[in-house]
Length: 251
Image (cartoon, rainbow, N blue to C red; front, side):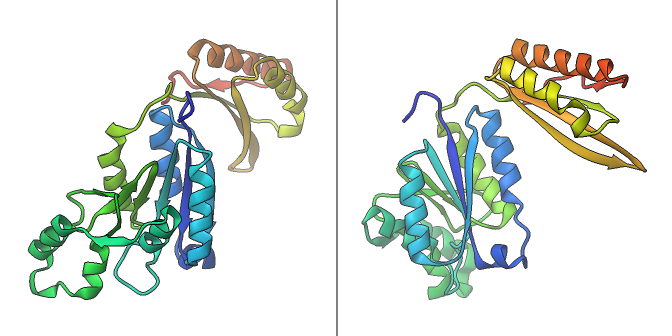
């Protein structure tokens, strides 16, 4: 595992790619991982196709500290993530009996073979258990297979978060002003070049009939972020505008 942990996310599901379902997990995982000092460096959205899942899992687990997947671990025919992850690791699926017993208590007479499919884990994997569902998520080496349902995905992430190796938390501050990106682009380029360890981004907005932008500085060193924000605010003043600077660092 690299000295500074980093993560990737694979969002699995035809319903996401078709636009029928709007993904709600990317923002949550990016924010939650950032608080742990584990930047989310890559996101792939792929269909329910076994070969594509296998390829994405094997590619990303070799270059990132952690890989998370969301979606495709339910009881229906298109829920193929567990089988695909097993194939990526070259192992068979095995029915996890403790999960079966937990599901028996929850579903009672409604437990059928389709639902039991959710207790099938790749050989050698550990279940990710939560109070949100009787069916488990999956951890195998550095890959974490989460549900697609946002509330369950969040519960599963919360269950595994304490076991993750943490880095320096990602901090951020922002400054806003009513001016266009083109007005301050040169100044932002200069500031970014002077502080390569700070991620500096500008994000336009329209409020009422006025155009403006938020300039966000992210990094792991508070003093660097403060310096960058001070420079951006000064550049905004030099352009004859009044900057509005936030007063608190956000994790």
